[in-house]
Image 1 (cartoon, one colour):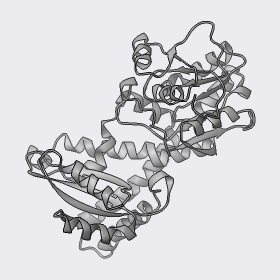
Image 2 (image 1 turned 180 degrees about the vertical axis):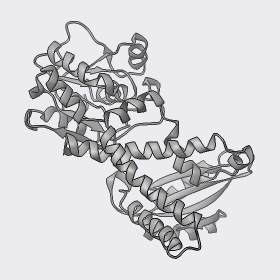
Image 3 (image 1 turned 60 degrees about the vertical axis):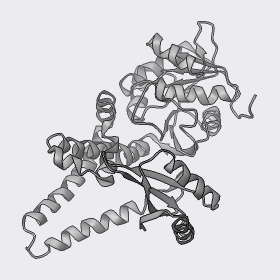
Image 4 (image 1 turned 90 degrees about the vertical axis):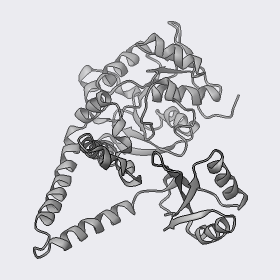
Length: 362
């Protein structure tokens, strides 16, 4: 058995991406994980992938993790609290105030409930997309309320630490306002931009580079799930969108009259505010450290990317991030490699000496 903090049997309700990923990680550590879901197929898939075993009627879990869609989270948590009167119950829904309010309205025993939210996910859902390492280094919010103490909920923090995540304490309202800013509004902005591409010409879309790919990367997310998330966190999201609307209006007015006094400054101020905002985004594993990027040209032949990564490792450089760009039909691709700033110049020199072509650096 692996070393672990959590010493309770676990029941996971919901065998989707998050539930199955939690099951995979806990099972690797020797935890007995019982899986339940309205879909027997989802349970069988999760079991086949090694995320646990099917739940039984005689299970007596010490910790129940509810990983179901937001619109049924509160009712599912209330059911689990009633069905397992000795268990601590948590959920991993992306909104926290609404489920807690609904649980109180239902008369549920919230002294055994603490909502959480792992800040991790993938564009594709379901058990087939699950990964045991999904939570490594990621923030995982504990959304506290006055009905339970963190001491009583200690097993939930043990769970988070065992999964390699970083516990972050917030109130439910602080959480919902925060995710509106860093998750829910970005999803809508990405989706709105991607929707413009549906009417674009094939020639225009054929010019797509990394910029539009970055902006629209999350636009392929599940619409049904996001309708639930956004409806459950509507007020904070709408408030931020109004401020985004004001900025868009400022840009439109400046561009409609580019020679008007102050028009160019208005655009410059918006760009500057964007620079300041992006500089606040944490880097790798929550670090605030900024990294340097160099773009390496790669021939579109088998093994070239593997050779580049191998040689970076041979040079003793730790690669902090990697992004790839390759346009259909092009004979070359581009690898944007992020490294600590002090490694940038030596790495460029060493790669150039080995025959690699550097397309850019920052």
